[in-house]
Image: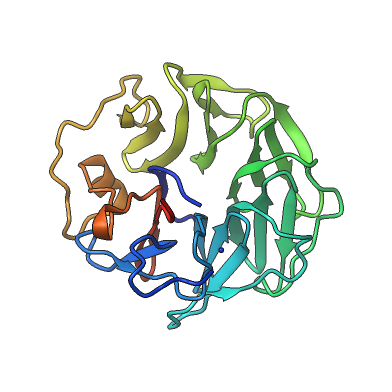
Length: 286
């Protein structure tokens, strides 16, 4: 299951003090009106780079501390790193059926078919490059890396390069089309990533998502979110800056100006829409 994730700022060992304003994760159950620390079980100074919902359990990818899981009804995260070789930075997670896939910084791919209790490398792995994003369809697993696109068509056991090129910051598959956010903009592939067509080329694009009828892209250089109606060539910027707080999707709230800070003005880098509410990755430390 894909959970909405949106880049906002930055973040980076000791346990938390109860009055520490800089926490790894914050939870909002009222569409971003209020936020509370929700990182019990995680080391301090942890940056959470991705969160997914896999069969009712939440999994969090972290820099330097591997993967943490939050079973249904629990309020404390549990480390689940058996099988990883040394401390690993996890950049992205994805799941399908009983399969969990973790994309790492310079260590390729890891797989788990035990709910994260045990991780192992594929038979044929991605080289020791950074996996920056993952997306799974019914038949194919796409891995965006800092050297282009890799794919697996056998549940992650073997990986092949599909197209080399610029770093891929994010991937989204919709309507038989693959979208990739890259330093050279937003590109589209209609042949599963073999060739690409440019949709937006002015600045770096960090994220891409779709919420009917709009295709959204998060652009660098302080531009923020842009969007266009599916099939249109015209991009538009937000024209309203009053956050939608009641009954809003995370995407619509971000588009209209959801404040991107938590308690004591802690800035958020990523926000994830999950079954228990919105989770925001804080910016621990100074």
